[in-house]
Amino acid sequence: MNSSYSTMNYALVVEKTSLETAMLGTLFFQ
Image 1 (tube, rainbow, N blue to C red):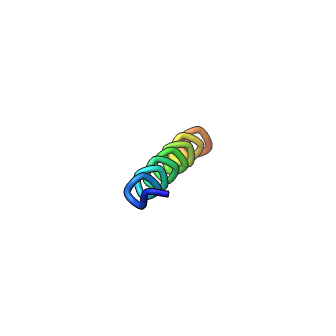
Image 2: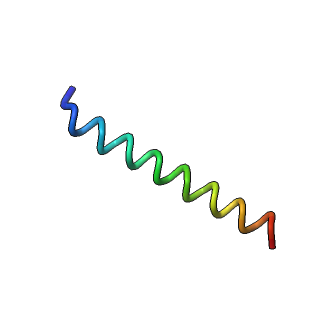
Image 3: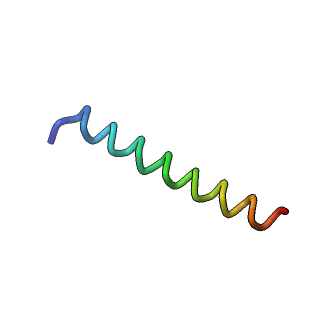
């Protein structure tokens, strides 16, 4: 597997996870 591809894919997963966490946080802490 290409290392740059896996790194980019990992960054996308982290970004998506942190975004969902932030959205949940704003829902809970309103």
